[in-house]
Length: 483
Image (cartoon, rainbow, N blue to C red):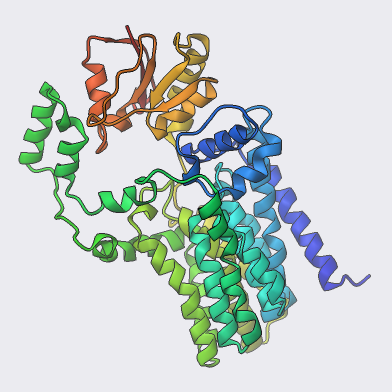
């Protein structure tokens, strides 16, 4: 019995979902994801978040019905399902541009990619962005521009990089002569604009903190907020260490653009770690084949590269759980180029259609076991030490029920069912009542904002109540309580 294109699309999507759900490990609990789950719970009237306006609302909104408990299990399942559903628009795009066998091959590559599985296990909105981007572009490829812009309008509400989707789609419509649809790019930005006006306002520093930090020498930040900002013996040691040869960098007057040379190898590494080296070679081959078809194809490819370049220039893109994390939303589009390359090679060699599956298998094996495979996303907040302190806090809550921490340690407080408050810098007036708690970690102390944590550890008014340490020695977490 012959299976239609639509029926096959449902079958390969179901296969992808079954595979991902079967081999997935436990949830990787990122601090951002736990904070967004806390935001979803706050919309149910339970708890609060430090900066509700910072987080795009779409992923937390989808999690609201599933946060009766801690929401971690439901969020993990939702992300794996969303990652599996990317197979549907990926299959549609590849079938349209390269034919059925190449479409099957690239869906297999998506389902078998270790980067897809490992990042889908992370509790955050990235898989949702993958689906929205792939869905919007897939609909445009099939000339369904109205629905394409409808999906594109949701992308900025999922992740900050989603802003490029409606703009790029409008530019693509113009390049392809779909003039009457191009104006929808402006309308597609309306939901994001309305959220900016009607939604909660972020703290003034939130969106610019990473970029702002990138414009300062590390010595100045250590003196301003870090260990050198409090009068302790440790400050003298830090300043002496800086004098004795800790690497310095000059003030970046031009902000993120001064880091462009660093962004190039970062981008290359992230691309290879997201796909594997063999697959990336096929991506470049497919891009070259499309580019030679005419100026429109070349311009569309350049349009696809624009967000890639923009993201890697932003300092906040570095310091993520992996180099591939912020680039994964472009992987489905890259796999479409792989489909083009596979079909062209098969036609040139006169090889049978199923031969592309063999090439895909080789690419998948290289991505899984090859030397260029990147490390899986890893979070200190998901460590044994962090979980142990969370259990201890749940059993020994402070009298006030409030625990101050940085964002990185706040997940411990949330898991313990306590009220989290921001741990201020040494420049902010702060006098919590007796019985208040605070969590300090080694990651905080060595960061540019570690001054407050160091001051607490050396303050006789704060008693050290508990310390948990990872078996390897890092990380460690300390809980202090004000007498």
